[in-house]
Length: 200
Length: 78
Image 1 (cartoon, rainbow over the protein chains, first blue to last red):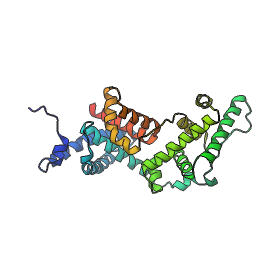
Image 2 (image 1 turned 60 degrees about the horizontal axis):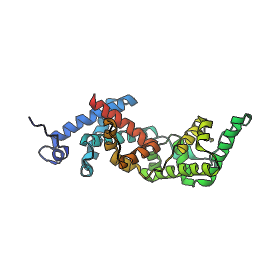
Image 3 (image 1 turned 90 degrees about the vertical axis):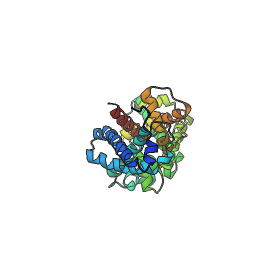
Image 4 (image 1 turned 120 degrees about the horizontal axis):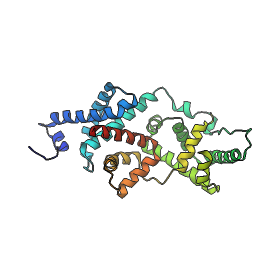
């Protein structure tokens, strides 16, 4: 009996062995997808659909597998992204970006308790006012849109789809926005630990 | 529409915990399988895997996908 590891790439690229290998890979993917998505409230039909789409994606990108992980781990990582992308698309299909980000010229208002004058509350208010100023003056329109959309629950890839952009670019906008706000707080002499303790 | 208290808390937490991140979401996808295997085996992370960790800490979407990947891999080992 052979103890050599199953060579997925070789089998999937072999005309004579491809069908059997795809069948095996399908079994592995389906088991993994069920482990990930049944607990997220999805059913077996959803897993089957994702599995089918993932197999096409994996076969199309098989040459990009570099062998730095097991083939099945790499394949499942692709299948998970296919599945979660589908869930996000379904969840947000009736939600427009405008509905989340519209109004006030993208200005983000901060709800501050006007009547609470305790020391802690006044410190919190000062921090929130600084945050509001930083959002208005340090962020670009695009950054404000992305921040607001993400806080509204829209994931990066859905924002990208609606803005004719891509996930990497939207993530960079978001990340740069966070870094600008962080730097702005530090320039305003707020320690991050103080802010954390004030809002924890 | 003003941000809710929960959204403000979320934003402040994300800002406070934000660190330099040179990796893109696609870069994370390329490396995440190797990262997951390292984590499941408890092996120490090389420099390129530390970048994946940093990205996962900064990107809620990739982190969500990573949690599902771990669940999938664990189900295969059951």
